Picture 1 (spheres, rainbow, N blue to C red):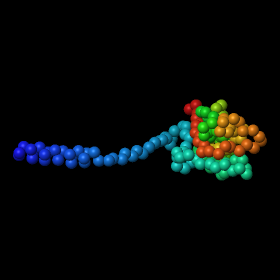
Picture 2 (picture 1 turned 120 degrees about the vertical axis):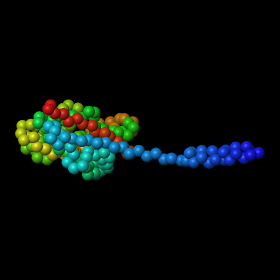
Picture 3 (picture 1 turned 45 degrees about the horizontal axis):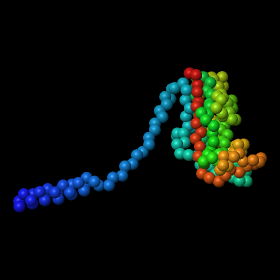
Picture 4 (picture 1 turned 90 degrees about the vertical axis):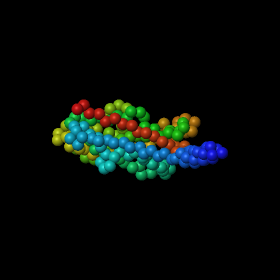
Length: 185
């Protein structure tokens, strides 16, 4: 009988212990990235303040102007001991399913005497920073501009929307505009 009570007590203790061990848990993760540039480095492309946007830039469509409402510009600066080119790694297109809104990507030099504006960044390299304009190797500031192109805008069936001022099909579009800045240092 004593043996039974000892076993029963152990069984009850084990049950309580295992119940505590099976408590509900919630895991959370935080994504962390670090970009550390050498302030004395010969080639740099940095945000003017803070960091490159890590959250999507939200734009809305204006039917009156056939354009985005107040698209925000992203300021950045370049420094190099040689010329710098910029290129898209893929076409810039807002998509939702088969619907598409092509994006014109341009870079505006804040000071044209120190930087070169690129009115249409494509998958063909274009010079944006010229060593000849920056003999001292100082930073030159720019604005990244994203504007919709009504040329080749597509509807829900993937068909080009006709007409001189097409309106995009309703939806929640997303895009990634990926660029490479290159300098032969």
